[in-house]
Image 1 (cartoon, rainbow, N blue to C red):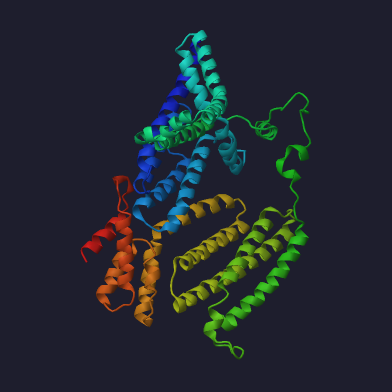
Image 2 (tube, rainbow, N blue to C red):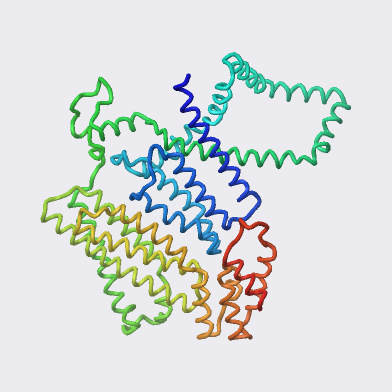
Amino acid sequence: MKTESVPVRNEGKLLLAALGCAVVHHYLFYGKTWGVSFPLFVLLFYVYYYWAVREKRELRLEPSMALAVPVLLLSFTYVAHSNLLLLVFNALAVPLLIVAHTTWHMSEERPKTPFILRLLDQVFVQTIRYVPQPVVVAFRALSFRMKAGRSQELMKVLIGLIVSIPLLLAVVALLASADSMFDRALARLPELTSGLELGQTLFRALWIACIATGLFAYVQGLLQTKPWSRWATEEEDFATGSEHSANTPAIAPAAARTPSAAVPRIDATVAATVLVVLNAVYLLFAFVQFSYFFGGGAAELPDGITYASYARKGFAELVVVTLINLTVLMIMLYGVKRPGPAAWRFLRALLGVLVGCTGIMLSSAYLRLSMYEEAYGYTVARLLVHAFMLFLLVLFVLALVKLWRERLPLLRCYAAVTVTAYVIVNYFGVDAAVTRGNIQRYEATGRLDAAYLGSLGYEVVPLLLELKRKHPDAEGVDEALQSFRSRIESGEPASWTEFNWPEWRAAKALEEQ
């Protein structure tokens, strides 16, 4: 009895702590917009997590801690920025990074397992496995304080209540149909209990219960990870060198024991042929670009086509081709059967040409989009496409390095670059950059889409006020500022948890106008 009380108490403490976190979550988010509440709850989750795993994994500087930095930076965007698109993405990115961080932190003893499989197993297997556990923990805690007979009686009472629910509903419906006064009394029950707001109270209780259950199940799944399938057991046996069962041979064939042996690979000659054909087309495209596009219209264009119309189109198609090339590059790096040294050098040279031609395509697409923006104005979507093209360029540079330094962990580098690039985009100030570009375009051409600027985040307000001071006659600026006033007045924070720095600064600037 004493030996079982220790895990029960540990699970009970973990559940009570999760319940406390859920109550705080309800206070921070229920009926409120997200602001400073978001980073506060992220910090609270980390306190809960490191307290829960303190006996199994001590808190120290290690590689997995690197993921905590983007988590905290992205959660703080709900205080520091107001771009709705990025905030929606961050609502997905922050939980994903938290899961990646905690899974990496708790599963470093299983380095042979592919990380993506560990991630999926943690979310969809281990966590779901412990979802019913809070009920079990609560019943064990009650039965531990009661005599065995009383705990069994309590269980029987609970079973009786559950069984009586459908019977009770049927009986009440029949009695209400048989007696009109009884039916009238039942109809008056909502009026008698209207002041209690039972529906809202039940929803709040359900909110707290769901958050507490989710936190407890996730952390308990990290603490008590179990093999979930024959494949997982065999994979771990392969990593440790142990036997899966008595029927498994002591020394299995290499093809059966190696996970990658069953993966089909492309013949090097086939891959080289594909690359030669693609590179021939891309080299022709590069020649055209240097003749007509990068030359600034020096070469003669056909009748009816101006250099401006030629340059302002095609950037979307070039980005798609770049993505195709990135896919081809990954397949060639990881899916081609390794040939002899001379053939491998030739294949790497072809891949180098592919990367170089892709760089020319990205440069062409970047310049085309810039010219398109000069003609039609700057938007958040167009600026994000610029950032995406720079991101693709970095990926291709890393792939080029991988061609000549094979030990480079390319996929890990890609993951690090992706997270870093996403954080940079969040802190770049997209809305402010778009507004500055449109203001410069207005000063050069006199054209301004003020209505679009009025739909952006609150970082735009100081820039529009400065534009109004410099150009009082700028069309549409007053209407854009009025739209911001309306948004601030209609969404005035009701609690300190909703505080957002750009919104507060915009409200102050509009009051001082």
